[in-house]
Image (cartoon, helix red, strand yellow):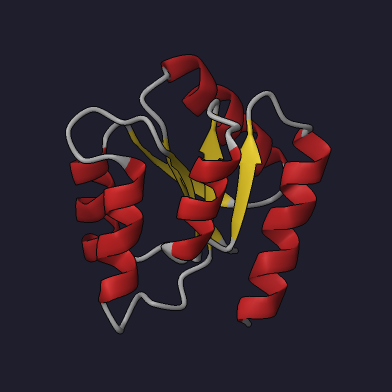
Length: 123
């Protein structure tokens, strides 16, 4: 069973994403901030990361940058999830190495399909 790490500081979003990913057949862990996300990845790397940009402490962009700088994690599929839909942020996320960039609100079905597609590519 593929493991997905959900990183968001909004408890309601974490709960809904956790439920959505579990319903889709994934094992889910969650983190509410950037440092916890980095700690979780270091302790037990997930198969895919759903990463919010606006996080307390270390931003999602910083988490992305640190993970991409680690050769062991450079291929970890990462989908940025954000309420910020500006093109400049999308370009920054993709330039830093995000595999995809989805703005909230998003289609749950489309998100599950993207997660499955990225996991299939990573295998």
